[in-house]
Length: 180
Image (cartoon, rainbow, N blue to C red):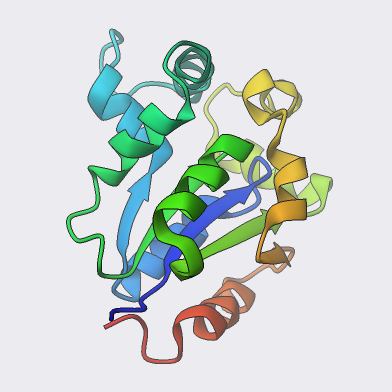
């Protein structure tokens, strides 16, 4: 029986979720983002790449209208092989975590990332075009994120200036050689 991990990543705004997910992908795990499922299934009427604000608004609308199980199922469609290891980045609701726990049981590892607010603000402002950190953090779509830490298998403070601490965490979860 294959025991490769299913890693679900939650965390605060600009805590390093995407960086962590991409590092796991580089180690051989399949990778999906909840926002990717939102964009693919429900699309954007805006020209070009949807904005962070569009994803936030659409994510909240979908949370209310179709529920997180539908959104999580759509996210799983982005993963080719559910028996192999994979990572889903961007869980924001208790229902997300419950869905993946029901589906994958002991294979699931919920990693919750945190970081000091000043560092997260700097990261956010360094990457966002016209976004406001305080507005993003106070948005309703982020309302359960901090509470998810209480249900995580691993809570990790990502306060380093390099990705070395994240790499060490990945080694602890998937081993030195990665998933494959």
